Length: 566
Image 1 (tube, rainbow, N blue to C red):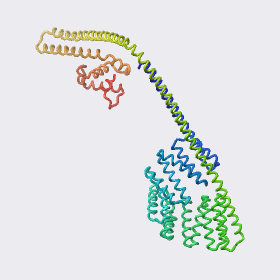
Image 2 (cartoon, rainbow, N blue to C red; image 1 turned 180 degrees about the vertical axis):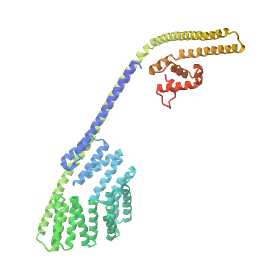
Image 3 (cartoon, rainbow, N blue to C red; image 1 turned 90 degrees about the horizontal axis):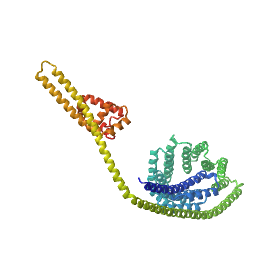
Image 4 (cartoon, helix red, strand yellow; image 1 turned 90 degrees about the vertical axis):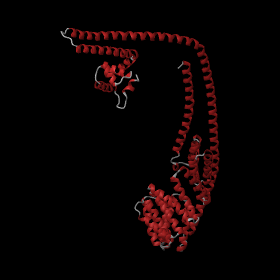
């Protein structure tokens, strides 16, 4: 490679790697930033709202389209779960706009899914069902079986409310078969409980109780599962006015929930037990358990549930003709409603701020895209200038190269002529060497022949057979001389470098083995080598075996092909 060509290639590669590395570094920095802020958001329950919004804002700024849409989706879900439904819906809709433009299907399906829950919580079932169906369509395209079964259960709930029990049951059964394949006991139980509720709505409580009884006897469920089964049994018996049996199952459910400290479940269980005890006329126990439920609701700050409990306590007081605390309960209800009203106002204010925050995020995203585009154009301009400079340099180098071309051509021709003369000289030297070796060998052969003739001449009687034997002996030696001359010429003239390289790589090879390898290189067979060497074929084969061991050849490797590499 010419020096100027080498400089050009190195320069171009260096600049290309510089720009590629700077781009990759920037991308990696953005990804690292998103990961950092995502880690900050992991324990959201322990963070104030302002901190959470700040971390989401930072993460969204550094994120690419897919990450940004997913972050906006998560932020929207977080806001909906924290009594900011309108703001949450706006964030989800904004995320939806991004994924629709970029065709990010998996995130789009999750957003539809989240919006379905949003409208379900607002009792807008027609919108919820619409979004659930959209989510299911994409999940089917993506073959996302887990989410397909979850969506099936969501859709079945709406079908059940519309009285389409058969269609709902078909969807529940599809999910149930899938969860059986996965041995997913929790979802198996939840799906069977959904089927029991459907049976209670469509056929009757007795048939639902029959299914629930079979679930109660199943030993696979944990304490949470057993609590749920007994809770559903208690509700069905309560609705059938079999209060004593309902009370037995609610007590079992309370025992199981206490063992796992499920405070949220206990609130519902205590309330149901209070209603059952009240119907049985056990007013003291009824008041005791409604107060336990109230304490749990106050602990988790569930204000709407507290209002329901106070209303239940009022109804208990009226039924028991105990009016002492009724006015107090009404006052507490009004106080809680005022608190809820204040919270709603505060949430409305927060939602306005969050709407502004969303606009700021969009502006930041646009600004980031503008900066990235500007930086990309700047780099493209620099790269174009550098390429132009390199092309100019290459052109000048080429002109310089052409100016020297004639001089180099003449020098090259002279060098070739010199090389040819040297090759001819070397060839003549090799021929001379072969001739000298052959003369020496011929003298040795003639000496042997003369010895045989002397032996024959010293005999007193010479018969015809002895003369013929001498003739055959001379003929054989003459043929050997001819053969040796040809072989020696070929070996010396064409395989000098071969011998040198073999001895360098494999110094353990003997002279005989080197000669056999040379014979193999010029294409002689095992038999031919045996004839030239005046040995048996077995001797040559044994030599080949020893040679293979010294060359460290595998059984599958060809000795002849290996020799040709040198």
